[in-house]
Structure formats: C-alpha cells, structure tokens
Image 1: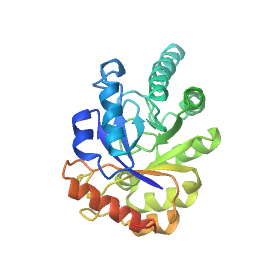
Image 2: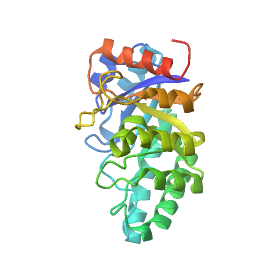
Image 3: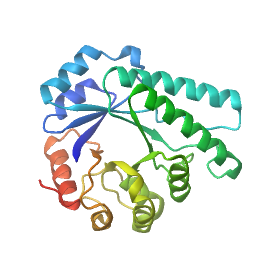
Image 4: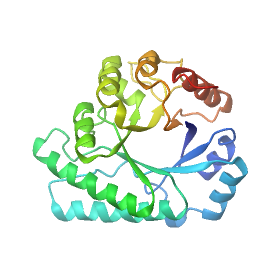
Length: 250
C-alpha cells in the first residue's frame, strides 16, 4: 500500500508537504489548466521526494447530463486531461461521481455509459480511473447507486471515508465497505464532525475508523491523506493512523 497526499493544484504546496509521502494527488483542470502546469518543476519536486503522481479530475465538472452533445463534450474534455496525466506518468485519476440531477433515475444508464467511455480513455492513456463518492454534495450520486454503477461498469472506486460519513454517518461507511469494498482501489482519508467540519486530521472528528479496519484491513491499493492543512506533523500523523487502521506496518 502506498500512502500519498492530496495537494490541490499548487506545486508550492506539493513542494512544502510531499516529503515522506509516496505520491502526490494533484488537482487538474479547474483553476489551473494543464497547459499552465510547469511539468519540469512538478517532475523535479516528485523526483526529489521519491514520490509518484496521481491526479484529481475537475471537481466542478459533472459526469452526465440529459444532453448527448454536452455528454460528448464532457468525455472529450476529460480525455484531454487524462492524456496529459498519462504523459506525465500519473498512476490514477480520481473522478467525482456527479450528475446534473443525481436523483433522476433516467440518467443512470447514461451515467454508466459516460463512466465506461471515460474509463476507456483512461486505459488508453495508461491511467487507472477511480470514481469517487460525493453523495453528500448537491450533484453527487448516492453511495449505493454509485457502488452499483461502479460494479456494473467494472470501474474501480475511490472511497472517500469522510464523504461517506457526511452522507450517512458511520452507517454509510459500514454499508459501502461491506457491499463494495472489493471495488476500492484508492482511498481518501480524513476526519469529519457531524456539524459540518470536514477534512480534519484523523482523530479530530467523529468517524469510526474501526469500521474501515474491519472491512479493509490489509488494503493493498493507494491511500491519499486529504487533510486541509500544511502542518506536516498533522499530515504525517494521519498517515500513521491510517496505516494502523488498515493493519499495516507504520
């Protein structure tokens, strides 16, 4: 298992925080287009830290709409980003599981089709696509629906533990891990408080990580610490707690 760090779209933050982590998860396509990323600097930062690269595809871009032309454009756009990701050696690309109306059941076959097309583009680029649960957000597909669609399309999952807690508490974490844990290739770990605070260091919130331990002990995929701080000690502590929760060597 490799434990990495989400770094947003900032090479400066990557440089400040990545040491000691095994990969950086860099956000692309929202506020910073790939043409504006200094690839030489990115590669130098990662080389100095002996770290690999994953990417997070645009947060604001929905995956599916009712309009075929817009859906085609979404695939074309994400294909361009995936080709860039492949060109710089990214291992995985995280995609939010979103729809214009996530509760419109008529969109679900279209969601599956879009997901399949984007996963194919990722395969062609040499990158593994992982679809992330964001059901707590306005356009996020509900947890169980996302799991069913990922299984139907044979798409790997980025399971965000904190997002699942925000959507349906510890029951949501338990339900997803028990039903779809075999699909999880990538984890986002952070802590959450039910009053709405999120992306906290593990131990600062209310998530019962014993549930994760029960279902994902020995996990051999990739884990990204997604804690919104540049305090390296806190970031490393969450990495240590994650390894302990997953019953892996510290």
